[in-house]
Image (cartoon, rainbow, N blue to C red; front, side):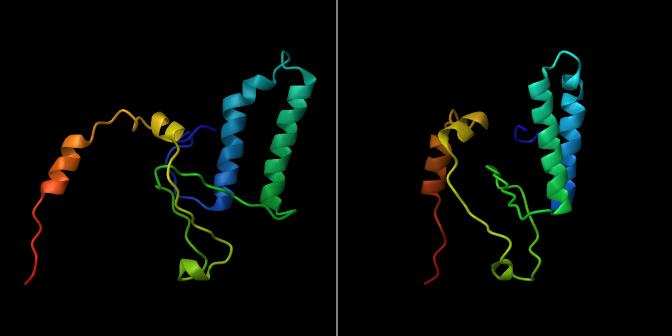
Length: 125
């Protein structure tokens, strides 16, 4: 799925996987018609089966949310995120391709940068 395909939502990890499965079935449901060759049908069925197995927790798995706008939030099980050993948070620099997709490579911020740098700050004696 492309970024933003599911829209904004408040959900659980289970809800997210279910939403992905349902969205794929809805969007690609007509893809499974008579014209699709059997090997591709089997790949789609296998993928759907794997999503179902994720929900049944038949085996351990890892969910990676790559959120280039940092607008996702997963609540830790504990009060402090550092104490939740099942949750890892990692900041990173967006790639050129991610910035391009977001339209950030063509933004000219030079006037804003100059205004920010020239702002006088109040200093205490």
